[in-house]
Length: 122
Image (cartoon, rainbow, N blue to C red; front, top):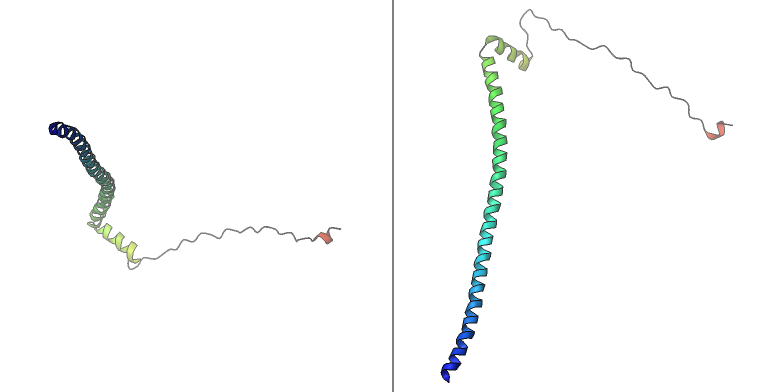
């Protein structure tokens, strides 16, 4: 008789163990889902940083090309003279400065009519 009681408890224990295993598997699933979510967020952030870095690199390459052109220009005496004239507004001895001024444009004024009050209409 005792044996049958223990056999019944064995089935109940099996049900409890099944539910416990399902709970543990569900918790593991949640932990793995959280890890995958974090990896996805890091990947998204890395992709955005890659785009920003590529744009920054392009701007730096354009700036390098402009500076290289300026350096080759400054290697000639004419380029050095032009740069000095632009930055310091100087002239060589014997040169004269000519200022070009645009002629004044005639301004048109709108003719204003005097304001008439309602009693002046009659």
